[in-house]
Amino acid sequence: MTTIALPVPPPPLPSLIVRLRPSTVRTAAARTSSPHPLPDELQLVADVRSPHNHIRVADVSPRASGHPLAGARLLLLDAPGNIHSISFPRRPHCPLTSTYFDVFATLPPLLPHPSLAVLGFGAGSAARVLLHFFPDLSVHGWEIDPAVLAVSRDFFGLAELEESHAARLFIHVGDALEAKAVPGSFGGALVDLFANGSVLPELQEAETWRRIGAMVAPGGRVMVNCGGGCVEAEEEGRDGEAVKDATLRALTVAFGNSMVSLMDVDESCVAMTGPMVSAPEEMAAWKARLPPELRQYVDLWRVHSVTKHGFPEENSSQENHPGC
Image (cartoon, rainbow, N blue to C red; front, side, top):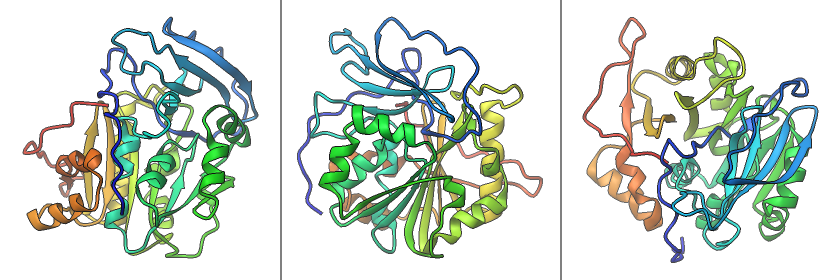
């Protein structure tokens, strides 16, 4: 792997200014609720309705003094205007976002072979970081809404990303949970699937995770955006923390107790399957295969295990990441 010197990425996102929201939405009908108005610091670039989403593209002014997303372009879906993808057009050679998309990009060194399924592609924020840092990696992304992809090609440079990585980036239009893949064909999988502003209900079922796990080769891993308190669902009764906990329980049932690690990113939770990487030599080897900009995340994982009653065990030995 060739490490490329990059400009310093933007600082972590303070939760009181803008909170990053989940990546891809899966719905059966067009939105009927009125979208929330954009904050004053955002300028609307495009507004598109599809059978699946109300899609808005908005820019944060580069002159927004002190704003952590100054100069960013945002993909907004759902009536609340949740952020589903982010890019910084003014620094095209630096794909880092200081969000959980960067955490996703730490996975390749742990995989048995360099191929990833991205379930919930959005505008390709995770894929852009992955393809930039890992020249041997191939990425297969699934996105249910062709309108999201069309907007991403027009406003997020996805067309150029596809052209420059034609031999390594493959985008499939369709339901990610119905992805047709040979069992064990991927070294790992990234899962970032939301509907109506909440983690997909299917992801609170262990059987769903067994099917996703079957896509991954022996020794591979799955990394997941589990949401959390920052997620504002459109449907009543879909509390972000409760849905996160249910998703983690399903992951634990599917992959085994103590076979799920966690990282807190602001009020969101990222989970990773497989044995906890905790031995100093293992952590050092992982960091050695990452660019310097991503090595900080290796130290932030903690093991997730549950009691016989199904409640998580407390583990306060690891401080949480201050937030993205």
